[in-house]
Length: 115
Length: 112
Image 1 (cartoon, each protein chain N blue to C red):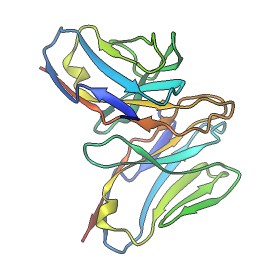
Image 2 (cartoon, one colour; image 1 turned 120 degrees about the vertical axis):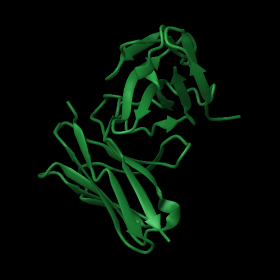
Image 3 (cartoon, rainbow over the protein chains, first blue to last red; image 1 turned 90 degrees about the vertical axis):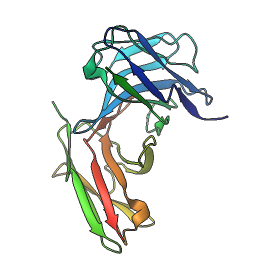
Image 4 (tube, one colour; image 1 turned 135 degrees about the vertical axis):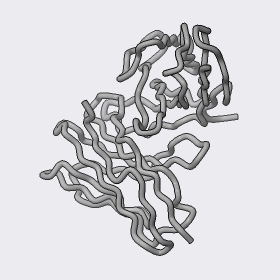
């Protein structure tokens, strides 16, 4: 299916465990993003990537690790999950361009609960 | 430092009424202002966007008004419908910079 997908859609884990959230897009978009959404905070950027093997920190990167070995995949890893990382995580992608007025397309989200 | 301030946090409007959501920004380098709409259980999706060279953009019942001198922009939803009930996010970005700065969102409920 074309588009952007996230897996799993729901995840319950325990404090201290490692968790990886997957994101896959079929458009060959250069840019990919990870956001977390929390009530009262809106959407906050965790990490983003301009291309394969190029990543950069966003507003709230602590406790998260990303990689991008292939253009279409952008996994997000919580190396040692904490309760404060309970959230809904959204992956997004966009085309690149000098003007960069390009729409970001969001995935359906992963609801993560850390017990 | 929050660079895009959105208000109100929540809004209840009667069917057929006008919904108005406001955003203010600080960074004068911002030059692209999109609004995203998010339904429960879904990811946000682009609704409408404006650049600061125009003061208003209209798409159907949705209008963005932009005031560059006041560093404010707003979303107006005319003839609001129950199907418009969603969370709305304003955002901003500048130049070749690729990331969006989002407001905290407004939960809109349109009552039948």
